[in-house]
Amino acid sequence: MSFPCIDALENRSATLRAKYPSSGPEPSYTSGATQTWDCEEPLLLDWGDVLPEFTVAYETWGRMNDDKSNVILLHTGLSASSHAHSTDVNPEPGWWEKFIGPGAALDTDKYFVVCTNVIGGCYGSTGPSSIDPADGQRYATRFPILTIDDMVRAQFRLLDTLGVKRLYASVGSSMGGMQSLAAGVLFPDRVGKIVSISGCARSHPYSIAMRHTQRQVLMMDPSWKRGFYYGGLPPHAGMKLARQIATVTYRSGPEWEQRFGRRRADPSKPPALCPDFLIETYLDHAGEKFCLTYDANSLLYVSKAMDLFDLGRAHQVATRARRADRAKRLEETGALSASSPTDPAYSLTLPDQPYEEQPSLSSDDNGAASPDAAVEVSSRPPDDLVAGMAGLRDIPTLVMGVASDILFPAWQQREIAEALKLTGNRKVTYTELSEEMSMFGHDTFLLDLKNIGGNVKNFLD
Image (cartoon, rainbow, N blue to C red; front, top):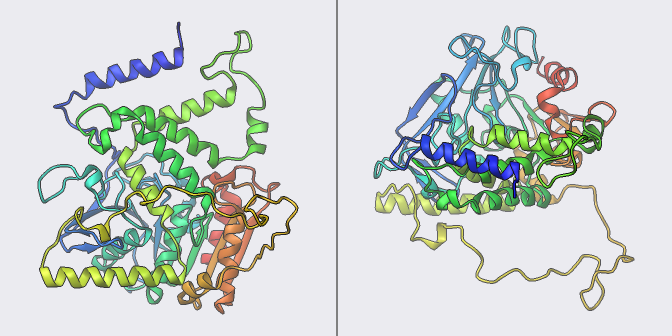
């Protein structure tokens, strides 16, 4: 029986096997030239591992002034490269092309803009597809667990080499919005302003669940091979499905109702189990376009870093204690291991006990859900989060949210703004785009030049 979508998948696998035999080279995910900086000093990571050396790929726009006070660090989303805008050596349009340039939101007549590929990524910075200097083999899933803070520390190492002591602003959207806040928490004396768009101050269960589902789908691809697929067939089927799941969260229902409705791709044909509705063919296209342009292991590691993000004080205290303990061990032993797989204190494994149903906040005496029970919901951010963001008290901050965003709902941006105000910060600007203003959901930050770009420009100026 013919299933065109499955046939196409099998044909692609056959083509890729011929193109990437087991002895062949791993395809390069980096497109276009970047600048790179190689750091030979070890980087201690939040979960106790160490990168003995690492590379950061970056691009710049504008001109740095004499006292280096006009530098903006632009943080990327999960799968973006450093190519936010076209350059002389790479004229292809960047992912924020219209937001950067003379007179634009990030005005290159005024500011020197730096954008990096995060460590853990695959566009020139050190990640799972990089070579482990310890043995000359690719890290694969021997790569250490990362956090958003680890990514930011690597970025500030780069800024050190550029001679930048203080940023004019730290700017980011989505995962970049997390990084922009983390930069202020980690280096409050080195950040002049913060812009956080469609981000959060701590990852919440819904977004963690969506990223978990994507990782599980990817890891179930037989070609993933527990991460050791380099030189052979990439897990393109798992990547395609993972991207389709992600794409569902990037836009909004109202937009898709207007854009696709219930239209079928070809009404003259009978319904099929393969992509049939126009929305299905769109998702299929989105997954197909992405599945070979980003490294599967990078998707796992970078998305996990997003899950671990939490600016709450308790989390920060625990992380500092863990880092101090690990630093002391390294100083005593003099060892700089890229990973510590034999040390259970610094590994992430399955819990010893399987999941047990948790009591509902609105349950009866027997633990059964009680729909009639009143649940008290507070709009006030938890005290722990307010305490953890206290270091941002004196930093002017723009927080932007989008009502149609289902991946990072606007209440998460309101939580950021309210927490900042509760720290005593009197320079918080909060802007929320209604569904009437934008129905593009999470992707609004990539598309809405007028509202997103306009507010960023006004705030920075």
